[in-house]
Length: 414
Image (tube, rainbow, N blue to C red):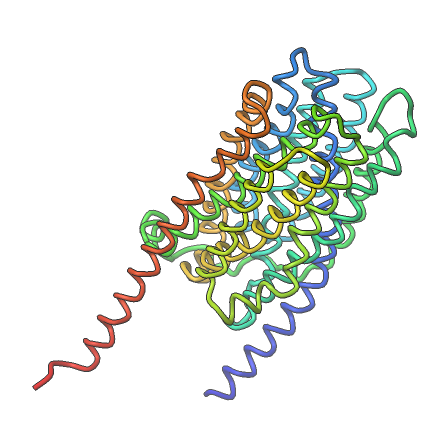
């Protein structure tokens, strides 16, 4: 029986490894979508918007698309399989590029917001790549599969900003217009890659059963995982969204902001080559805590000066902190559900993360316009402290539960 189980796990892990390669490649290509949007969004927004305080609205609309796309992604994956959801997502990516280019050529702010909304839908589907990599994998391999797919984002960190750098002046005077055409072409390539993912439609037995979502969401482990994800991603987004425009307001160049965003994205995904191993060795809660502390450290760097080096260092440390906190929180989510519950639980988790992120994102432009770069960084500290406190309480509750189980198995002492 043990030999049969071990053989099944090896087969499943081999399948998962094959998927990881394709999903990591898709992560790299899809990451160019968000890289182009974040490198250009606030600058294009400032050019097209009727008021400077609305400059970051296109980026907020992108995050709104992320939130809006999470639950439909889960529903489509549950009914038709993840691959169908992936192809629909890349279709949204193509629309992002085409509509974005048209908006810049026509000088339409609201059409540009429509483009970034489709970009958010594409990004929402891409968020499920990390969970798809863990489908069917053994417990030991899941954190590694998840983090290896995220490592594909390293190449997005190079591809996206360089795509902007190479193409931003091709259609003068329409800055960045051709960058979005190039982004649409990259989304088409991602579609081809994702056609080969082995993600069949769920079996009929997996379509029903499982615990109610509310029961799963009440677990202290899930509460801690979701809350830390809700803090790690929106806080990173708040600072990253504001940084390009803040750098421009401080007299730095577009090339300076492109360089900062490029290395921020590399820092976001680069640690993924070993984050899974760190989680397996030290446990997800410790890695999440380290990530949150690094995000706070990034805010301190942002408060310490406004030179290009300060911005770059802030964005790099912020990226590493996000990697540890978000991948660690995602690994915690995997510990809270059964196989037949995965799509609804994962989609619900991402909906909360990006729903809160959408709400917070709309305030980033107002914060920067009315209170400055320093206030953007100050906002990071209270949520990080809350996340660390809840994570500690959840870990304490888990240890107490284990001690009770040991006592019950030992029986009464004489």
